[in-house]
Length: 82
Image (cartoon, rainbow, N blue to C red):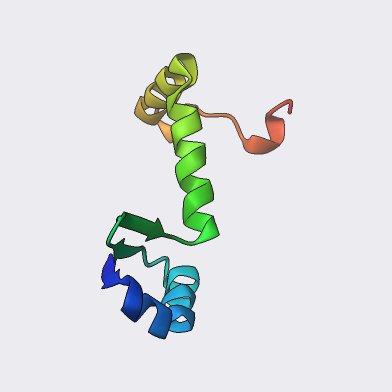
């Protein structure tokens, strides 16, 4: 995570945003009234999806159960009825 103040953020906004997008670098910008965190859209969407999946107890337990299964016991993805 990159930590910067608002003044340096303004001076380097293009470079910092490019680093967030290209390298998934999170940026913490401090101001007099508090801090803001900047991250890539990809990281944000992943975070939101993880929170959503974690909020569904049955799905969370199914995932944990599935992680313990041997891969040879799984069916091929082409056989799944989507």
